[in-house]
Image (cartoon, rainbow, N blue to C red):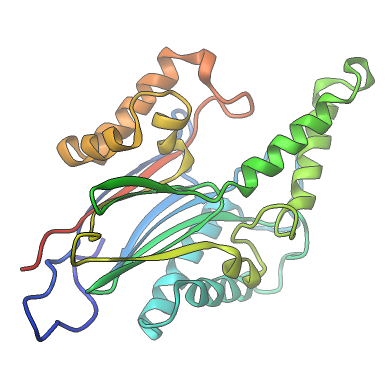
Length: 296
């Protein structure tokens, strides 16, 4: 992690906003040696990436895996940010995806529906404003203007809900559970980076321009005070286990730090097996927590 820095020029009419303060934590699922999440900071840019786990027995057309993909995507985002610090986040993400495509070195079938992919959650401190980007299911929690809100990209969940309805129409005796699961994964892959499906960082740079984006001020009554970037393994504290609400999650991060949130998620995974995801009993979990002080 780099030390906190700021970007943007100072306002000659008064003192500029204080530097963004950042804390983060990331941990693999218990019993797994590899963490397919990644948290990073490159100066004013912070991010959380969550690589898509490949179910056992499925081909990807690629000699690399999710861990390789998220590390290369983060590095390429850092390069893009350094080269074009004033560019839109969507443009820098597209450039990073394109660069990672070249990093495969011609060894892989990048048109394969199972090619490595990752969610993306980014936040950039631009001095007098904050830019953000959310692609797929890694939410961003914001405390701005005295209100807590959540920026989400729910297209994957919508696609999965439709898929579950489709699978439910298949007679129970028509296929064994393994076959039904393989069919479901195949359909999900076919909907990745499609207009009526969902969008995720993979091999197509166009996906970047389908991200949810926005800007918040760092001054005035609507100023951003806190932000949390989460992989779904960490957001499960609210969405899956109901340990707190979004405002309570920010308060927990403020008081106890990101590591405490991950500890509570692990406790919940152990203590509430009835609430676990069917396809994944536990998950990698990551959080980047940002605090924005008043003008210096």
